[in-house]
Length: 223
Image (cartoon, rainbow, N blue to C red; front, side, top):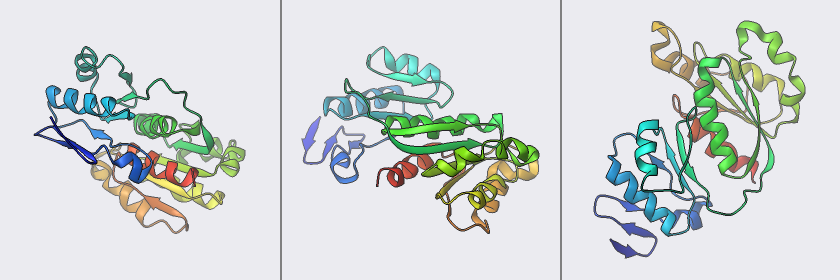
């Protein structure tokens, strides 16, 4: 392993150990497409450099194999996130609300929520309050009004983000999910609805990208 200023050269990967100083949070590892030996080496490099670790879209069987070598690693099965935060206590600040339209959207919402918590944000969850039963959302209007940032996770047609934005002064990070029947086109319909929102203050991340939403909402919350 060659050590260079700002990154660790593992041959197959150049682990960005300088990202913490540049961005305020270390490099995050996207797990699909990497074999077990690659994930082990990358995880060790980050931990060795005293940096927090997040592995996204990590399957449980891969986590179990990885934990045999990386003992410090923890796992959230619903979010499919492996993570390590060292021995320090995480101090959580602000008020980020994560909303899901349906229970099928919860895995993506949990990816956002756990990412936010690891990054030091106070998180509240409001799940299964989609537009098909809008009274469920309105019953929790105070949570929406108090939030500093809101993440809205929705599949099907993805209308919930516009509705929530219209009820709040907080910026909304919309996450389209691939949940839905055929004409949902694996999340494309929700993505287009969110991109075409008529409510100002909505930004949109990629389909099923709970991590990206959590990261962006954390940047806003911690300003």
